[in-house]
Structure formats: C-alpha cells, structure tokens
Image 1 (spheres, helix red, strand yellow):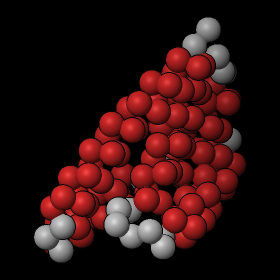
Image 2 (cartoon, one colour; image 1 turned 90 degrees about the vertical axis):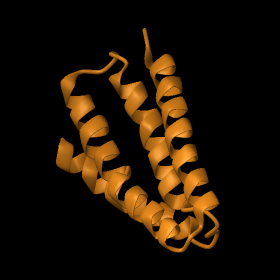
Image 3 (tube, one colour; image 1 turned 135 degrees about the vertical axis):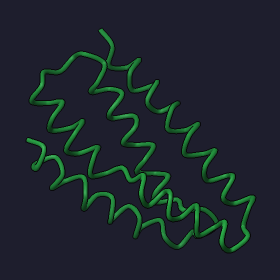
Image 4 (cartoon, helix red, strand yellow; image 1 turned 45 degrees about the horizontal axis):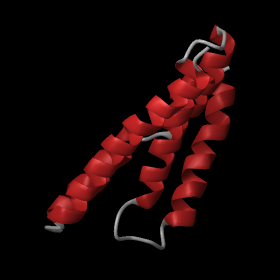
Length: 111
C-alpha cells in the first residue's frame, strides 16, 4: 500500500513543482505540496481510517508528495543568494500554512 501511494505522490510532487516553477520569487511548488500533504495527512490521521488506508495515503502518498529535503535545500539556496527576506517568507509560509493545513485536515477528519 505504501508503494502504491508513493507511485501517485512522487509524480504529483514533480508535476506540481514544474507547473509552479515559473513563479520563482518563492519555491511555490514545494510550498504547495507540503501544504496539501499536511492537510491530507491531518485528515487521514484523525482516526476515521484503518491501517491500510493510513499506509496508502498517509505514509505512501504524503511521504512521497511532501519534501523536507527540497524545502531545506531551497531555503539554503535562498540564503546563499542573500535573499534573506525570501528565505524567511518561505520558512514562515511552510511552517504556518503546513500546521494550519494539518489542523484543518484533522478537524475535517475527526469523528
């Protein structure tokens, strides 16, 4: 189930990043997949689903969709370019929107 979820999540991450790559002020593709993945994970983790669905969507899909390593790399790249404001905006947006999306997903998925 994890592999099946990852088979969808990984290409979705790549395609999302490619679709949003023309707007380069911030790493929008990474932000988008992290926020969506956080929302889905919150929803799936709220307790409505069994272990098979959690493995498929939570571990497989969200694990392949979201990307902490790319987020870290892009933040480091912005800092190396001395784009301190953009780096701070990216970190703030990923953390706040990610937690907000997780909370919303949890609230929607709670019994």
